Amino acid sequence: MALKFRKDPDFAVHNRLANNTAARDLSIMVAQIEAMASAKGDAARDEADCYVVAKSKGYDVKALKRLVRERRMDADKLREEMATLDLYKQLIGMA
Image (cartoon, rainbow, N blue to C red; front, side, top):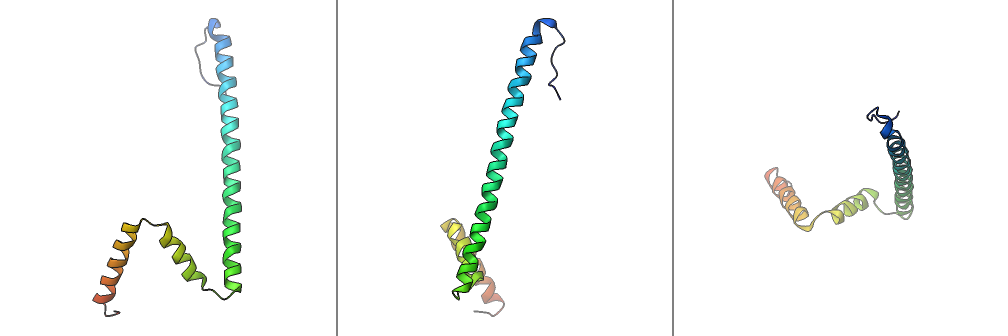
């Protein structure tokens, strides 16, 4: 699909160059997105493999995943979440 431009013969070369540039840009962007998606998939498989190894060594995978999630969080946000969790535990008699 070509971009829509004025149908003026004086702009024919400009229109063709603009279409070629847009096609080249899109092609590059699509290739970059595909490469990133592939890398993301590879990283996810590598992460899953790490959890399999951890499990085979006797580690609790659920606890590891929570630890990783908490380490990614902002320290203040984590403290707030933990304080709220502690409060809720107290309110239902778990603490």
